[in-house]
Length: 231
DNA sequence: CTCCGGATCCTCT
DNA sequence: GAGGATCCGGAGG
Image 1 (cartoon, rainbow, N blue to C red):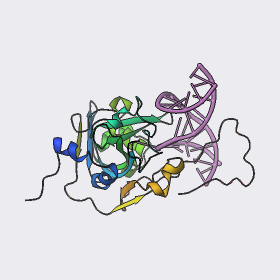
Image 2: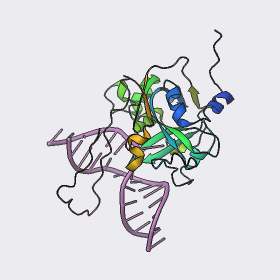
Image 3: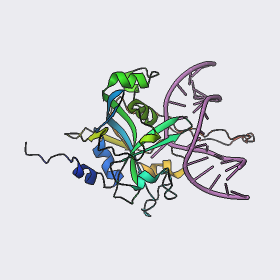
Image 4: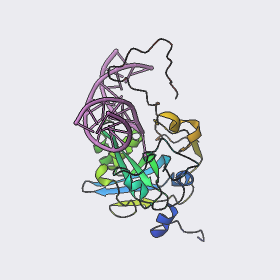
């Protein structure tokens, strides 16, 4: 039992102050817990994506909400590591990030998928449309829903009650990586292979590339205008 | 102020 | 496999 202790408390926050791309594989297998009035739900992270801020001129990240600098919405991403950044999208979905990097530097990990390891009943109550336990948090909006998180939680400290974050006691297993999902433009290309997941995990999100939506009053597409359909 | 389109999920075919 | 749902952040006039 002479192993170096896992980062916890202030050490964990310091640990999270590193580069999100390096932290991403290390956070796979970590367990995020949220206790609410309705009960406790814990998710073991199986898939995350790194997003950076405008500070790193060597790696501009056009896929990041912070690409154009700080705004009221993305402010938590510029704050201290270990806090949550939750945003609302598509008029109906919430997605959760854990802020990384030193204070003042925007960086975060989008929590894309996980396995419910505690509070299965409550998670099922929150996600009645899921068909199996593996579906409960197999997608960023599903994960946020299962944990009961909304924009009201954005900026809150994930390392303090009613939240908790625990790193895996042993490396969680083989890690795969690939391009980020649903990011329009260059930010979703192979150049940004900042999505990491636990190889073979059934909870990893089965995703389709975000399809470009028809614009309002768009003229009919000229024939031969091929659209991308990558998977 | 108006307009565009998204770090998505679900249902129906 | 395709389309709809349904808000709001951010940019530009």
